Length: 232
Image 1 (cartoon, rainbow, N blue to C red):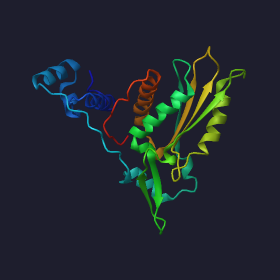
Image 2: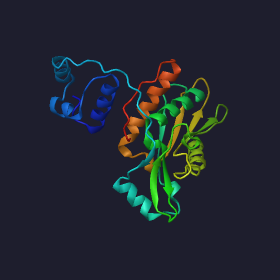
Image 3: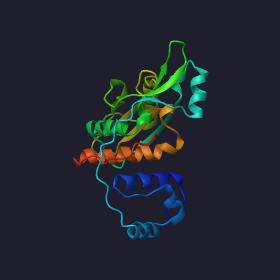
Image 4: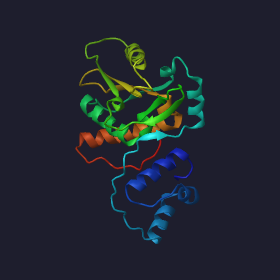
């Protein structure tokens, strides 16, 4: 059953589009199972669409109501309006590959490249920066705790305080992360903080799954899977 959750449905539609299958959200809501969806696709005899290079989404972008609310308040501590997660990986992560994978995710998700821009009168608006712009590069701090005793929580809390102060919605970056490495015999933990202009509560699952997929692509030297341009 794939029609019961909006987030699951959105993920299925994006994956199908990347594979050249013409699946719409309406199809999932109506059919609700993979079996019925496969039958409809077979009956319509879809042809695989040719791979098309999507133009990079950059430039001014419209603001959602909650973003407008945030911008109009001109908060002095606007950079601290963040969300954060701690993720336990299933294995020990390689920092260089993790950083390359994150760069792919940022390139695919324009919301992570959003910046606040102000005109000569101080009025704020949003602009999406190119993936190659230096401000689009995320911060990834590697914490070598191989010979450090004690719990992980104080180490990650200290990293969160350091990195949260460096998140900047006007100059970038919008995302910062800390990789806690306890050595070869241990799995990794990852603290991730993102400014709220680039993430919301329901987008975390999409983002973390995309980051995991990109890490696998980098690790196994696979070509990146192309995804539709979606404001996440």
